[in-house]
Amino acid sequence: MTEIAALYSRTPPVGRITLSRPNVLNAINGQMLSDILEAVKQVQKDSEIRVVVLDSSCESAFSAGIDVVYVKDLSPWGARGIGQELHQTFGSLRLLEKPVVVVVDGLCLGAGLEMALSGDIILASDRSEFGLPNIKRGIPAIVEAAIIPQCVGVMGAREMCFTGNNWDAAKAERRGLVTKVVPAADLEAEAQAWVELLASKSPWALATQKDIINKWMTTDLEAAIDFSINTVALNWTTRDQKEGMRSFIDKRQARFSGE
Amino acid sequence: MDIKYNTLIVKRHGEVLWLYLDRPEVFNALDQTMRLEFKDVLTRISRDQSTRVLVITGSGKAFCSGGDLRSMGNQLGNVTETRERLQDLQEMTRSIVNLPQPVIAAVNGPAAGAGCNIALTCDIVIAAEEAVFGEVFVKVGLVPDAGGSFLLPRLVGLRKAKELVFKGEMVGAREAERIGLINLAVPGPDLHKVTMEWANKLAEGPALALQLGKWLLNRSLNNNLEDMLEREEVSQVLCLQSEEHKEGVRAFLEKRKPVFK
Image 1 (cartoon, rainbow over the protein chains, first blue to last red):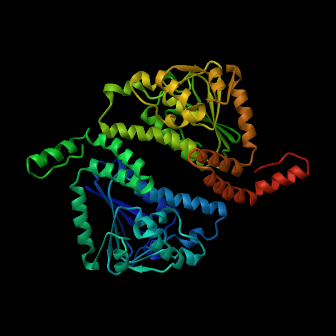
Image 2: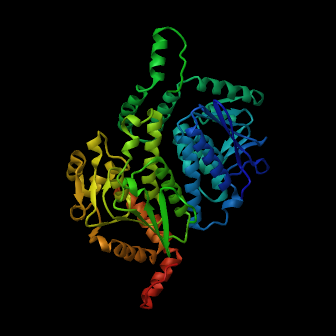
Image 3: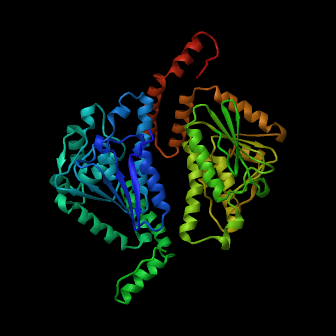
């Protein structure tokens, strides 16, 4: 399968990854996972890209989840491989040292929700729906669904996983699953505002902050604190730290060069 | 595996693939090209079902002398570039650890710094008697990388690991074998033959069980007994369902050698 399933377009400071299987509600297959992984690799090394936007070319969905046709006839061993493939791509988004803004308009289900949660900021239209229907397909929610309890608590996670029912956008925002919900007509402008805000920050500070937040999510308190103490030294080797602090004393806006 | 590399040579011997680190004029020092080519070839090998064992060795007199010093020190770029190079180096270690197939290091000569730790990351390490291993980082004001800080205390204990890292001196192959750093030291001329014997034996083994066994043992270094019991459970159930296991039992009952496909 050589048809591109996720398109990468570059307009500094934004790198945009657009899920592009609109006819199948952006069902996730191997091609899409490797397209996204490839785009992430490019973004990581591209110093002109400060923010990633992850969005969809499908009018009614961000992504409805894994492509059932792609996985239904796998052997147990093959299924394990799929889990590893999903985690490799979703993990690459979570670990990418630049902020990822996920723009959701419509269905965001299953592996599609896991992908969205691997980003940093989730902006959703008020008509979006979020859920983990895996249980309805005879399988559990896996890989980056592990982030869900950290968003909505263990009771919310149990509710989502065991019922497989969707949450509307209002519930998703109320319960802390997404960053912000806006009317569908305002979604693009909202995304643009976030991009401008994030692109104005020091890329170095954002990168180390994202590393530190990932540690907050994954290790115990002391280890996370220890990591942050050691990592912050890197920021003091950058011009951005000096500019950030000098601009405060000079009472002016900071202008970060990214060095 | 028809692709041609600038810094690596790939040779196939049936189901065993030999990968030569190939910059003999600089004792196979790692440069950016080699780091990237290494990750590329290992990614291809991980998807290549016709390769059941990987052997890593060095062209010429050395196994690998580690980071190329001529592109370090004052030649180094800014923090971003330095981090990128380090990340590419650490990816080499990950590639070996994550490779489904068993990896044998055939250490033909000196293995220093990152070159030493890349050898030690391999699953089986066989060395020529004249090979030497050195955590030489401290001699140029650096700390161990390529996974050395994790592996060394686990291979030789914390006490010996600190000695090796703080002194940065070379350890001969026989001593390395004695302290548990490597599996086996052999006379130089026998290295190729002995390595092929090991490799062929593993290539005839059950690929799934070997892959999961490698994964379990690697994971065990990060885990407790309970986690490992659970991982063993899942892995064993998969193996018990496999054709390899059925063939293994059949062969045993029929008093013959198993043929694992």
